[in-house]
Length: 107
Image (tube, rainbow, N blue to C red; front, side):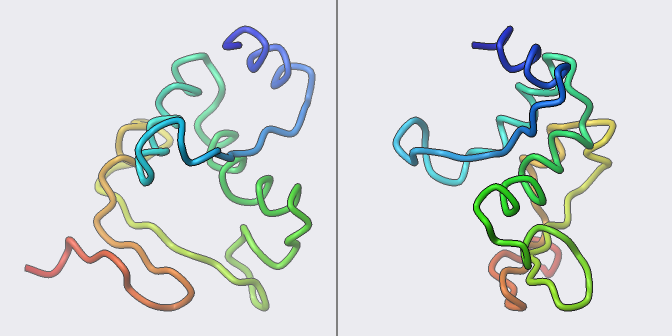
């Protein structure tokens, strides 16, 4: 499977995040960032797979990007996920549909 994902990425296949929500504990899907970057897929490509590509492939064209007129959820992490994929496993702030749903910044 790992080899197939790498081949697909190199061939230009649009990768997208998804889950059957029974494969692993809900909310731990950030581990996939680490797995995919460990295979050599660039971190930005993995982030785009989880955001813009996933929304686009579901036909949700007004999601997955931070732009005027788009619906966006935001995640603030401690670190640069382009350099350390593990940073995405440590969200400090999560804003979903304009509402703070996790705040580890405020004591």
